[in-house]
Amino acid sequence: MDIGAPDYFAIMVLAFIAVTSVLGSSRIRGMASLLIGLTIGLVGLDQMTGQQRLTFGSLQLADGIDVVIVAVGLFAIGEALWVAAHLRRRPGRPIPVGRPWLGRSDVRRTWKSWLRGPFIGFPFGAIPAGGAEIPTFLSYVTEKRLSKHKDEWGKGAIEGVAGPESAASASAAGTLVSMLTLGLPTTAVAAVMLAAFQQYGIQPGPLLFEREPELVWGLIASLFVGMVLLLALNLPLAPLWARLLRIPRPYLYAGILFFAAVGAYAVGGEVVDLVTLLVIGLVGFGMRRYGLPVLPAVIGVILGPAAEQQLRRALQISDGSVTGLVDTPFSVTVYAVIVLLLAWPLLKRLVLRGRGSDRPEPEKAA
Image (tube, rainbow, N blue to C red; front, side, top):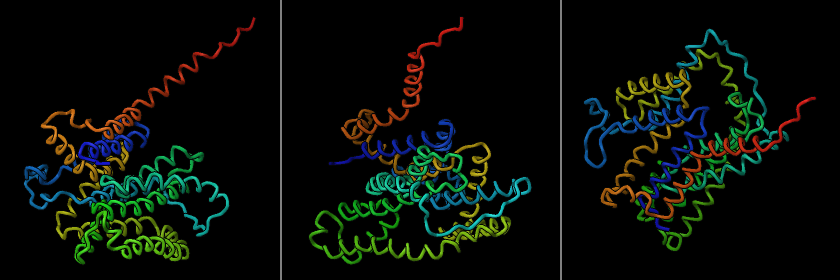
C-alpha cells in the first residue's frame, strides 16, 4: 500500500486526538496542553520558506528547541519546582523497597498489559509518524482506563509500568521494519543505524533481505540477546535503583536539577539551552499548577513539525485544495476513526440516557 502525505498527516492528527481525548479529566485542558506543545514546536526556521518563527531574533533558536530539552524541562524541572513549592506542606514519607521478582498477584494483574502493549507499540514503531513516546503514552492511558485499581494510579500501579514498557519494547522492534524494508528511520537510534549502514555501502530496502541476509537476521537475533542481557542486568540491580528514592527529597531533587541542566547543556553546548530549559520548566510548573497534562505537550513538540510538513506537502500536491487531505481510502478511514473518538462520549451519553428512559417507573405506594 502506497502511503502518502495525506495519510501521514491523518495518522498524526489521530495521535493528537487520541492523546488529548484519553488523558486527564478535561478535553479542553488536553487541547490546551497540545497547543502549548505545537507552539514550542514552531520555534526555529520554516523548513520550506526559511523564515524565522518565534526566535525573538536569537540565532541560537533558529534550529528549534530540541525535544530532549522540552521533555526534561516539562517533566524534570517542572516536577522539581512543584515539589519544592510544596516541600514544607507535604513532608516526605519513607518509600519501601520491594523485591525484583513478580509475585503471583502481580503476574495476574500484568499479563493482559503485556499482551496489549505490542499491539499498541509495534504499529507506531513501524510508521514514520511513530517512535517510542506516542505508544508509551497511549499504553499508559489505556491501562489507566481499563484498570480495576484506579486508586493506585499515581502511587505505583504495576499496570502503569508493565503496559508502557511492553509497548516501548515492541516499538523498538517495529522501527526495524521501516528502516530495513524502506530505508526510513523513525527514531534517532534508527537514523544512527541507517548512517552506519551507508558508511559500509549497505542500502536498506526491499532487496536487503536477499543481498545481506546475515546482517538482517543477525540484527533481529541481537534483539533477543539484548532482551536477555537487560533482564540479567536489571533484576539484581532493581533494588539498588529503588533505594535511591530513600535519599532526602531536597538532595534528590537538587541532583535531578543538576543532571537535567548537564543533559540540556550537552545537547548543543550553548548557554541559551539552559535558559530555554528553565523557561520550559516554569511552563511545566504552570501546567502542573492549573491541571494541564504534560504528555500532550510533548506529543505536540515531537509530531508538530512533521505534521505541518506533511500538511503543506498534501496541499501542494492538491494545488491548495483541502479535499486533497481526504482523497485516499486510508486517510478517510483514519478520519472516520477520529470522528468516532470525538463523538464517542456523546454517543455513550445518549445510549445510557436511552436505556434509562426505557426502564419502567416504580409503582407508587398506595
